[in-house]
Image (cartoon, rainbow, N blue to C red):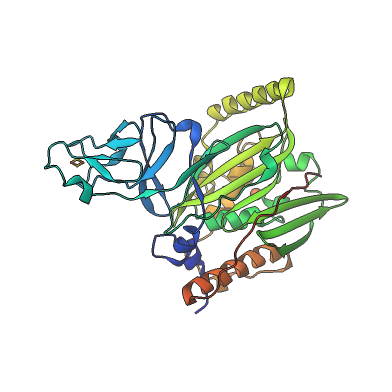
Length: 375
Ligand code: FES
Ligand SMILES: [Fe+2]
């Protein structure tokens, strides 16, 4: 049977897409927001987990609940790199082994354990490997090797991760959905782009040509991308984004913007960022605006032009305005969808291989993957 949209957006542990996504490292938390000794509950791929930073500074991801009587481990005490349950003191080390049960007979603890997951912290994001077996090598990008500012964000978005991936790979929508934005100001929306795309060792290379300007971006399997991003105050920068499902209908967009500025230029950039965040606090939250548009209370062309998140709001209207569970056969794709079509073919092929016990492609990120910034 052909893979349906529903197969791609269902991400629970037993689902096809859920099994597939669990074969890759996923970002799960912003490093600077995970305070020492303050465990947090998180939900990723339809599953609950506890994330905490041990006294050594290392971040750990373990099961959500104590196996004794089920208390959330997000309220546990951090002792060294272990978690001591708040209720009766059962203590679990970073590997999940129960190492202490103060009110129980000695010898009972070694029979008890919780699940723990490999983690690594890179460039300000905490990643976890939530699959079975040995974790794969961490997928390195060399865009971080020059002096730069790295701006990490985690935006919770109430639409499926795959709708967002399709939106991100779709270059044509700029000319329609992103009118009245910074893209107009730099002439990006003056004419429709000429598109090309091809499957690569890592995913998809996509190129949009507008006049003499090329914009080259990389979609990296299974759920992230490296592309260029334009902001008035910084020009073009590298933009890395992972679309991580929290469940079938919601995801977190983890982004790392890599801005090659140092010294006084970096100061100017930070000041502009602060100013943007003050303006954001004065406006309606982006998700509220999206909901209002979709409820017919505001037309998308009435979204305030000076809203700092106008581009994200326009994308949100497009993603959240599509039905979640629909037959892919109902979509009428044309040549402007060739990037989306290739994306769907790749996902179909991989999920079919997973379902049928076939061979999965061993995705590899080459050294020196770069974007072209420029309109
Ligand atoms: S519920 Fe955790 S120790 Fe009792
Ligand atoms: Fe967009």
